[in-house]
Length: 67
Image (cartoon, rainbow, N blue to C red; front, side, top):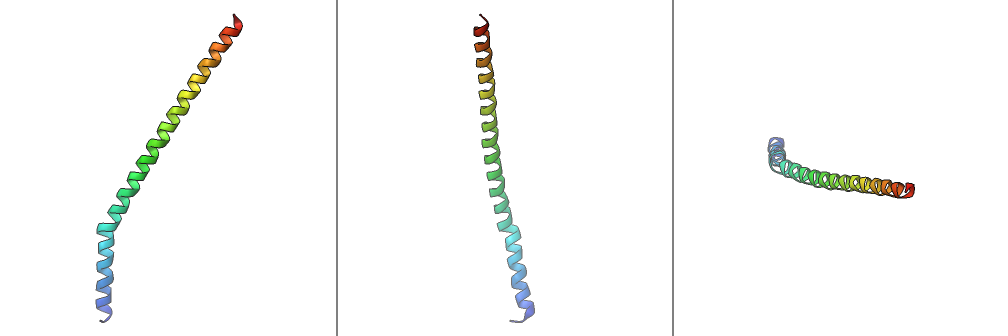
C-alpha cells in the first residue's frame, strides 16, 4: 500500500465518522440536554410553588397574630 491508499482509507474513515457517528452523538447530546432542561424546569417550578406556599403561610400567620 502506498500513500494514496492510506489517504483513501483515512478519507473513508472520516466520511463514516461524519455521516454516521457524528449525527448519532448529536442526537444523544440533544436527548440529554432536553432531559436535563426538563428536570431543571420542574425543579424550579417546584421551588417557586414552595416559595409561594411558604409566603402564603407566613401571611396567614401574620393575619392570625394581628387578631
